[in-house]
Structures are given as C-alpha cells and as structure tokens.
Length: 171
Image (cartoon, rainbow, N blue to C red; front, side):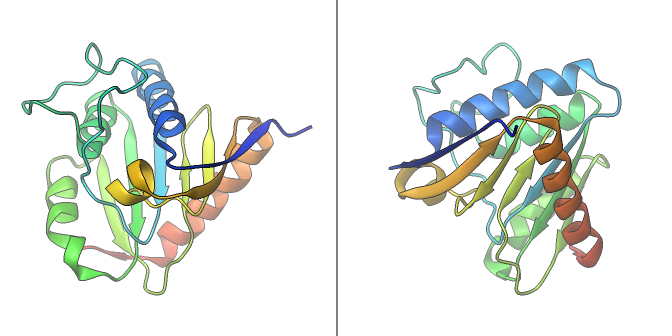
C-alpha cells in the first residue's frame, strides 16, 4: 500500500522544508545520491523562518537567510547529483545558469511547454501544483502529494528522468 499524504494548505512550507532536510541528510550518507526537480518555475527563494526544521548545522551559506539554491549546492557538495528541468520562461535562466555553473554535480535543462511539478529524492517524492518559487512554497494554496513508499518514489523518479532526458541543456 502506498504511503502518502495529500494536503491543501496556504503553503507547502513545513512539508517541503522537512522533505528538504531529510534529503540533505540522505545526500550526506549515500555516494550515489540523486535529487530530481521538474518544475516550470524554480527560483532561489528565501526559506522563511521559522524553518520548522533546523538547517543551520548541515547547510553552509554566506548569506544571512537560507535560500533554495543553498540547499541544492549543499546536496552537490555532499557528493550528490542534482538534476533540474525547468520550463521555457527565460526570466529565471540567469540564476539557474549560475546554479549549474557552481558545480558540475548540478545540471539544468529546459523543456518547453513543461507544466509537470515533481521533486524526488531518496526518501520522498512530491508531486502536485507546487512550483519551487516563493509563491508556490510560502504564499499560495497548493495541492500536492508527498509520497514516501519506494514504488511511488521510483515511479516519480522515472518521470523526472524522462523529462530531464527530453530537455535541452540550459546554456
């Protein structure tokens, strides 16, 4: 039986923060760790306080506040690989290029007409309406499912891989 949790809430903040914390810890433990992001919009939004979880001891940042890209950089610094597939909205490309240029363990691709939203790590997977933006995580009412059974995680990972392989390298 699939283990999942579906919620409609003003934001996916608490759930996403806990998901990211679990996945950062997983990236410290496993040499072949992979984190997959498929979303039309991915921005370097600030992770608002309170985080509901403590990132301070496991994420290095030079900024006062923690941002999404700090989490992704830390996963790569821990030896993991981060695969990001975004849509064709060029407004966000400069920061996404910087993200990919900071580590050869982070790859960003573009898939035009992308509307899928899925985030997959080792111990969990999220899919639904939640974009990885400030609005999607901290402000909007979103409907999403958090899966933590191996079968659902594998199915969503396969979808992420397919989208990534269809995308073109962000240059």
